[in-house]
Image 1 (cartoon, helix red, strand yellow):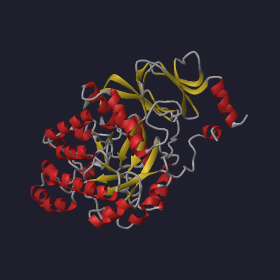
Image 2 (cartoon, one colour; image 1 turned 180 degrees about the vertical axis):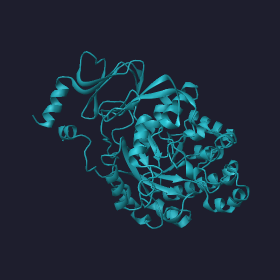
Image 3 (cartoon, helix red, strand yellow; image 1 turned 120 degrees about the horizontal axis):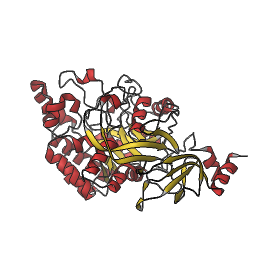
Image 4 (cartoon, one colour; image 1 turned 90 degrees about the vertical axis):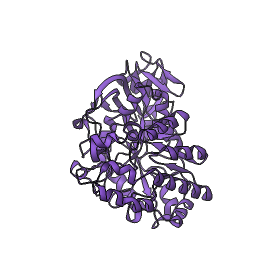
Length: 471
């Protein structure tokens, strides 16, 4: 029997590869008590299916909520070149243990991700090792600006990332003429780390004199963020390019960006929503050190208000691990960055429990939003024909986050010892149960490159049976 006939017979006879039943499912209609049937990696039926469909495998989600697979739109998995901090296998393993089904990985590796061969090397390294689906950013730079349109259309490329500050060498793009060249070459949404490099250099003497990590937000102040954000939005208006501003951290930026939503989408991070200065620096020291910095409560309050107002589009973790030995270096020699992909969903579910946002709003920020903004094919919602990516959570499950739970090669989290309410129980990637009952399900990594509207067709199809059945 051919693969196409096998698929057709399964649909005709209501036989699924996987049937998820008994849960409360978050669909575009809201929360519904329905079942989900998965065949060949896709969702093929929704409704009262238990007892009407047979299946090779079943997952009882009674008492749980079934969310569209969480997409973490900003991670740094450090491979190649920095794998003592993190690698693709450990990073994606942490992702699925945290209920994340897809990630966008950043270009500041060694070598930098600037050319087609760099992107292909990452795709090759992920094959057979990545636990979740994935895509990689190309860095936007003076050396490759005229080639960015070609790069962003390659299979497995989410788009172009620009560092206006907090970077070095070929990945730093702080010159206005270079930024214009980057903006003019390409059509997809450009992701930006917006800090003003000149101001950062001028103000670094503040912390070099004090060696006080508590002054991290004084060095990398609100003005450095706002100046860079205003500049890149002005240049985007000149060139007609759409922007995605990453890890927005200030009240001033949010007030400005709310007036430019016709062109700009906005990401915020769990650490800017969960930690605040000066308390986090007094308690955690350089473990709380990030770029842009965790700031005072007024900024956190403004970010939450912007979520309520709808001005925030995406929550990404900015998972950026360093070893504890590196973080223990005297400030400001200590590097900025913390783990985050594995704690993104537990932290945000805890915020849902606390009433800071609704579960439906969280789904929009972590699933539908990334899929809509970046044009991901088949992701972001629980609907017929979409990928069977499911993050199944216990909204009332109370857990304590511990360092020994963290899969990252760096082995730590700034939330060690924090109790949260809301926890990922099962993770399903394209119909494969990769985490069951909070542990890896004993399967091999089967993550694949994400597919984007208008980009090259992946060399490895989603599922041969499904692809051949629709051609």
